[in-house]
Length: 187
Image (cartoon, rainbow, N blue to C red):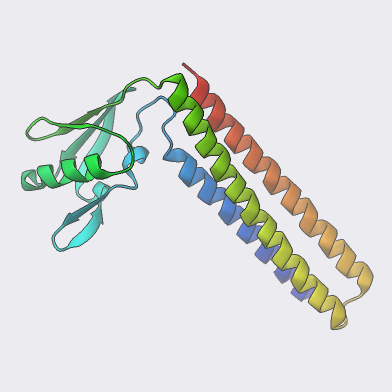
């Protein structure tokens, strides 16, 4: 029975870590005043009969803090890539220079900063819900083990351990989202 409890605890920890990693990936896509190649990680281009990530079709780099440069490996893809960037929900305006696409990022307005902070809070809340769902599932498994012969004391200790791990991960989510919010608010 002890091995089962350890398996449940490890599974809950893994699910909570996964939720935290997902949050970090999603927050990296939110613009915080600085240009970053990661901002274009969600852009897919329709070419060669399939949808391909932009990063597999071009070099993406940031020559300065307000500019993203996209240089396609094949010149005939430049118009398709430009359209994919323009059609993405990122609100970016690509500028085709013939062999390279330049994306200039305007400074964030106060209204846009507040909208981005709302988005950060929404993503953080979704991560917290995922962590709580992992806690709920682990507690249900422990409860089932108690009903099938695990001692009640061991069940309570496991539940307390699950809650402690939940609290740690919720605190990490709060820290990650607070850092992102402060990055967004920097002028």
